[in-house]
Amino acid sequence: QVQLVESGGGLAQPGGSLNLSCAASGSTFTVNVMGWFRQAPGKGREMVASMKYNKPVNYTDSVKGRFTISRGNAEHTVWLQMNDLRPEDTAVYYCNAQTRAGKILTYECWGRGTQVTVSY
Image 1 (cartoon, rainbow, N blue to C red):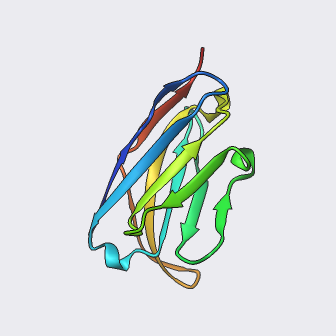
Image 2 (tube, rainbow, N blue to C red):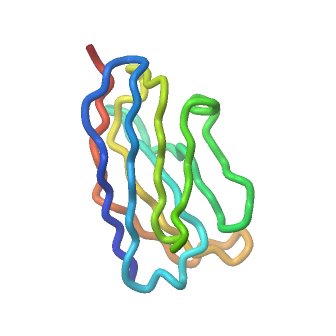
């Protein structure tokens, strides 16, 4: 079992920045993909950014050039630096950890989510 704890959400004005963090604990040796998803009111959950260790990072098109995902030296902490925030970035952001064997998902867990609101 893996536990994920997010922090860093809150209120930001358009054009502002926030930095989200996610700390993984437990059986983290099984995890090889970590990322961030978000869910806006009335919408489905979408992938924001994900990184498989030692592989290129994936971003959804709407955040490219504005958001940056990174990981700590221990590999089981990930951050999401969000710059130039827009009202449409308002959502609950979820940390996600996966174990994949190639394209096969064998394990997945989610954090509880942290609210990000972009508004004046």
